[in-house]
Image (cartoon, rainbow, N blue to C red):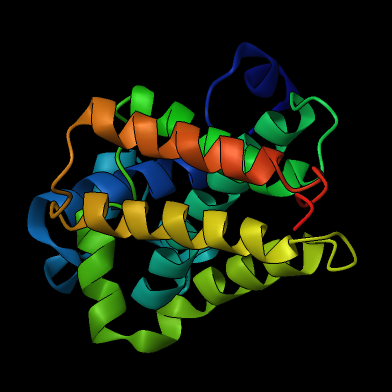
Amino acid sequence: MTETAARRGRPSARQRILEAAEAVAQQVGPAHLSLDAVAERAGVSKGGLLYHFPSKQALIVAVIEQHIHEIECARERAEAEQPPSSCPVATGHIDAFAQKLCSNADGVPPGILAALAETPALLEPFRDFNRRFVERLDRSKPNWETAMIAFYVVEGMKALQIFGADPLDLDSRRSVLDAMRRLVGEEDRPAAAE
């Protein structure tokens, strides 16, 4: 992409391919995802697609990594907006998910979930994402475990949403997230005297 095209906001061929792969995977499922269909939808030649992604698995990994990058960016923005607290990392994680919940944005494209089930090695980007979150927590703070509880609550809510198995309505999910925010915010309060 030329610098002029970048300034105009036109997506690069790589980005168009990633968006096309998500759309095709949602339509036909990753098992039936063909590089030809993705190339056609992205408006690039198959050779152009292979230049960026030499295999179907490389393309699916890139879609997963892009999804994770978007989550991390949302979490960083939410974390930066937090008032000083004992655990802005956990509060940012909660708020990023709450914003996604309110925008009704989808989680991992359903077609990608099937690919994960077929090829467990594709889970590695998610494992790295989770490791990075845990590494950012300050274990010297009191009750750092509360931040981990918040992480597990958010990730569990995501899983339920992805699989369409969440028994709560949107307002109830927001209430749960608000309760988690309060719990994380209480980390610095001294324990009551016994």
